[in-house]
Structure formats: structure tokens, C-alpha cells
Image 1 (cartoon, rainbow, N blue to C red):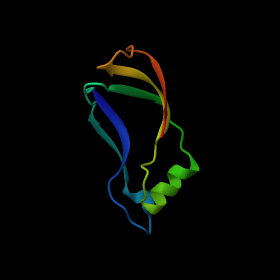
Image 2: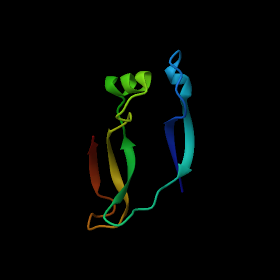
Image 3: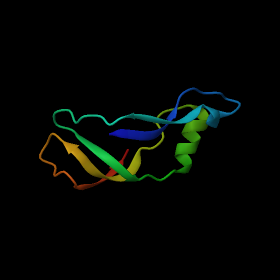
Length: 85
């Protein structure tokens, strides 16, 4: 199984969005005490765009909604989660 995501591969102050690319990576495995969440909804907020334009932290995309894909804790697989921060 693979995971598609937008990744900031480099930063150019003249055109900050030129460094963004749609990439495919393997889905990570849940480490002990963690879960892997399949994101089903992810808003793009003004703060995300400001972060991309300035190449600053935090990394854009810190909010969203998803479903537990893989677990290594007591969290139920298929459980719904809200991501914030």
C-alpha cells in the first residue's frame, strides 16, 4: 500500500510553491504505543500557506480528520480521530 502526499522538497523565496511536489511513499508501520491514521479530510488554512511562503515551522498540514489504519495500542482499528497540532 502507498501514501500520496504533497511534500516541500526545496524552497525558493521567489516562488515558494514551486518546491511542492505530489509524491508517493510507503505507508508507515505503527510503532509501539502509536497508530497510523489514514487522513480522509485535511483543510488548507491561511497559516499553512504562510508557512509554505516563509519556509518556517510548524510544518503545514497539522489539522485533519482520519480513520485508524493500523494500531499498536488499545485504540480500535477503524476508529475516527481528529488531528490538531
